[in-house]
Image (cartoon, rainbow, N blue to C red; front, side, top):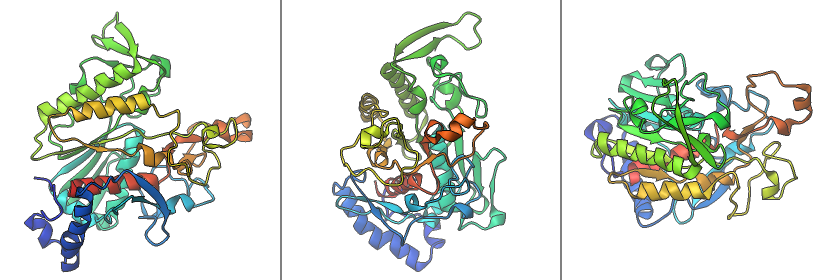
Length: 384
């Protein structure tokens, strides 16, 4: 059974922790837990500058960071984005304890399910854990999707399923489909769901791939049918179908006494700098400061989708922990990969003259913002 309270540490965990770690995992943590359980909203707060504890690891020290999010290796000149710590109003987030996390994962499997954004959270989790594991006791598969801590018999895995449902974008390597042609197959959650069975900690996310406009294509039948029946529905209705399918799968396949399920909320993009008082026609390129307006909410992040997500998750018959990271991430226009990532295609002379045109304002540098997502996951795992 996975922990639901910080003072509930199994005997194996206690045997593998020294006295200071046990005290940290009981007394001090219980005090913080009391504040969290007494109504502190972890997702309402502010970013504070912290050079003493940030970053939680160094880019060069984590060999699992992909070139797509290794911003320093790709020439980013500043590091300020690495030194911000999320501070909730009224309480503090406990320090991430890699030993405690690995002991909890002993003999278990953790899986992150979704698109490249949840893959960033997966890589962040691996980076947070790997430094305390001897080199000969850890491994990553060729594709960078499955990390194993051998001494713990623990597995942390990423599973590509951008819509959770079966879609025409399911190939983990070749999945580029024009937005207007993206579609999912109705009633197909088990296509991917069969791979999630037996997982002890599941972390789901799906959002950005649905954002193709005001409508979305749904396939009735099979992708193998010669004549396909395709209907278009409102994007909110299509997204609702996907989340409800996930919910039904969880209720039918997961034992809440043995499994913890998380849903990471929408990751915001920053494609319109005019919305935070920047230049017209700009985006996250060359942004090194945070957004200070506590009410900021970009138009790229649909509130209608937030309402759908919250409504459906609140209807769940089994516990699903919602990591409501959208607002706190919205302030971080500085933390995107921007132009400091591997470019899969040669840049044109026109692009080189206009970096805004190819800046990636969707994905995040590591180390960085997504480490905070995992600190919040850690807090919810042990203190909720």
